[in-house]
Image 1 (spheres, one colour):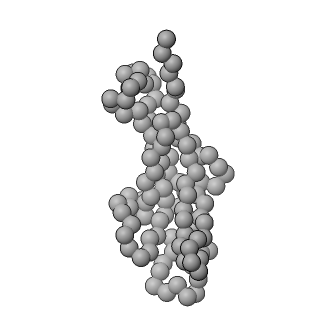
Image 2: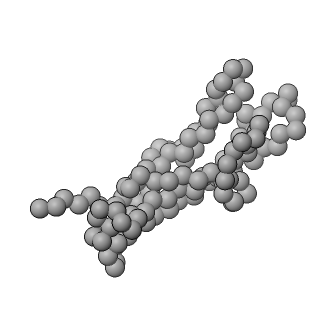
Image 3: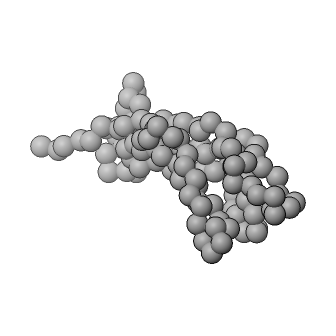
Length: 114
């Protein structure tokens, strides 16, 4: 007998969709963490002006939202079961805009906030 796990749509896993942690030497870095979960484990894509951010290799990065999604992909061990007509095999969420203005100091020149 096979046991199937049922897909769980992505949902918020904390009251705050995104939390910001100040870190690094002299508190010069911010770590953003998006609180969402689902099955299969969701994918996360940070966004700026509602466009995906492909990579972050610059000195500063301004993020406005996070898009979260999960999907039972073709070829997954049980994909024929999960992808049957009438079954939900994917879900998605988008966070509210991220406000980092509280973390911008007077000494940070040339950096704009979201």
